[in-house]
Length: 225
Image (cartoon, rainbow, N blue to C red; front, side, top):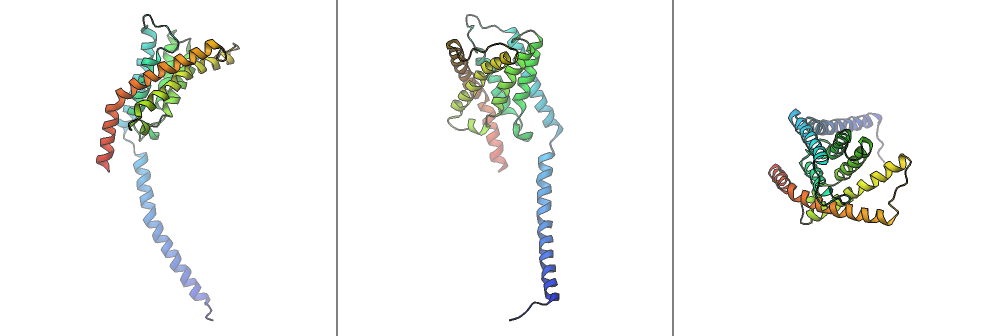
């Protein structure tokens, strides 16, 4: 039986060490390149995202303050026009910035603060909670689910849940301020149903409006691949 001398063992270790160094030299540049691609975001991309957030925040706030729906004073009826204004920027958000997440949450917070400061939507506290919740839930909507044949249905259901959170946000605010919420009463159940229904309508409208952006994004991905 042949025994390995100390010198041979050192030679083998040197060979293994050299192979490991070669692998690192091949791997590190690829990792660094990917990192540079991820973090090297053009300033115009960031500016475009900020413009999207501020534009939709102002539009939502102004609509809430200025517009009134004649003959339709039902709970959550503004979900018909509010939810499209959340879904469209969700689709338009640049995926290079944190995967496109966070934009509609910011829109909800800013729009809620603006409209609350202008005396609408129950004041700043109520409005911020309401619309930030809606924005956060729309933020969790995977844009990829809107591209398929059932995208309109997914957008509608997601928007319905988001609009329904408007009610639970108000209930949470009431709990925090010492009032008794009414979501366990029959009236509360009716409010939840109406909010969900109006949200679904708004989600379907928003998904239809956003469909051209989805098609453009799809073409960009296909040309890049």
